[in-house]
Image (cartoon, rainbow, N blue to C red):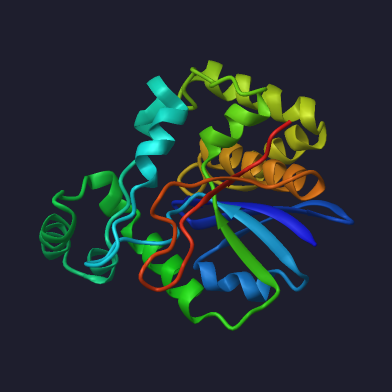
Amino acid sequence: MIAGGIDGCKAGWLLIWKDQQGYQYSLLDRIDDLERCVKSAARFFIDIPIGLSSETFHRSIEAKLRKELKSRSATIFNAPCRAAVYEVDKKKAKELNKRILGKSLSEQTLNIKDKILETDRYINTSKSTSIQLLESHPEICFKYLNQGQILMSKKSQKEGVEQRLDLLSRLDPEAKILYERILAETKRNQVKRDDILDALCLCLANQISLKTQTHFITDENQVDAQGIPVKLAYAKL
C-alpha cells in the first residue's frame, strides 16, 4: 500500500507519496482528482477536518488537540458544522454555525471551508475502496516524530523551516531532496514552504505508522451523524 500526505495550498492540494520508484508529488485542483492521480491502493494523512458537527452531533476533538500542543495550540482551529460548510454565502454560513454550535466562524476557517466541503463530499460519495483518507495534523505529527517534544518554532520563520526540515531529513534523507525539488518546480503563490513541510511530514508519519502502528487521538464524540469517525492519526517513534 502507498502511504502519502496531503496539505491544502493556494493551487488546491499538495499530494506527496512514496512508492517503489521513490518520492512523488502532484498538485491537485480538487480532492476527487485523487482517483485519477493514484492508481494503487493508498492511504493518506490529510490536514483537514473529517467528521463534522450537526444538530445532533457536536465534534469536540479540537479541545484535546489543543492540550496536545499547549502553547502551540493556535495551530488548531474549530471545525465548522456541516450545514455551514455546505452554505455558499459566508454570512449565512457564520449564522448557521453560531446557531448550531454557538460560535461564529473565523476568517481562517472560512478560507478553507471549500476544501472541507470537497473532502466531506468525497468521503460521502466516493465509491473507491482503494483510497483511504485519515485526518491528521502536521504539528501533532512533528511532535511525535520528535520523541513527543513540541516544536516551538514557527514555520513562517527561517528557524522553524530549518528545524522541521532537519527532523524530516534525519528520518529520511530523501525528504530534503524532494523539498528542494518541489520548491524549484512550483511557485510560492501556488505552494508555500510550509505547505511542502506539512505534506512531507504527514507522508513520513503515515509511512512510519504503516510499518509500526497507527495511533489515534479521539474523545467521547467519535462518530458524526453521517457515520464518519472523528479521530486524528499520527505515528510514534
